[in-house]
Length: 193
DNA sequence: ATCCCGATAAGA
DNA sequence: CTTATCGGGATT
Image (tube, rainbow, N blue to C red; front, top):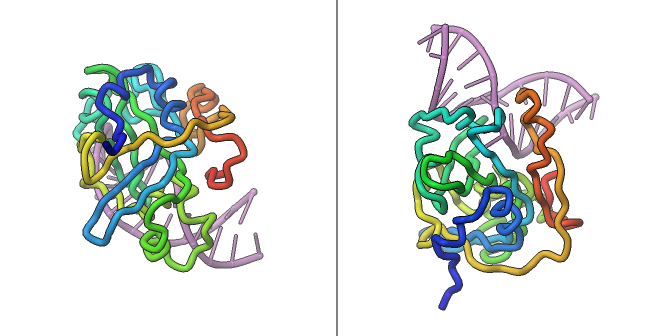
């Protein structure tokens, strides 16, 4: 029994899911091996009411399509040459998601180090673009169900304390800029900032 | 704190 | 074709 989180796990309100994911283990298997990390920072994006979300106002495009489906699937997209990974949440036709902003390396340290090049360990996975590179998550993981190989989330540990604050990198999003929809494990050393 | 890099999707 | 972007890295 591998304790991979089942599809039902993702059937909770997006803000709850963003918190529940903290401490869970994000795993990616590739030909080069398996790499994983404990999720330590997340952000919620609640499309219908959130100007910072790609799916704001239920905007339906090729890119946002997966968010209109069932929760528990992967939403990847590329920005500024970096791939970012989200967990689709919300019921059918509710385009919401949780962005994974940072993880703490767990399995496959050698592989992570190789992928991240000549960096210090604390910089391996402390950002949304860094962790995808470290774990080998790529754009074509878009649409993958998170309860099966090669990309899945396992039960991890229960964080002692969770902090909450404004999201990062969305200064151009009007009032949504100030919504406190970012969550992180208090004092974890792999937080993005 | 500031600049630069530059892939892609989306809108004009 | 033009523009904006849920970053990262290097540099001041």
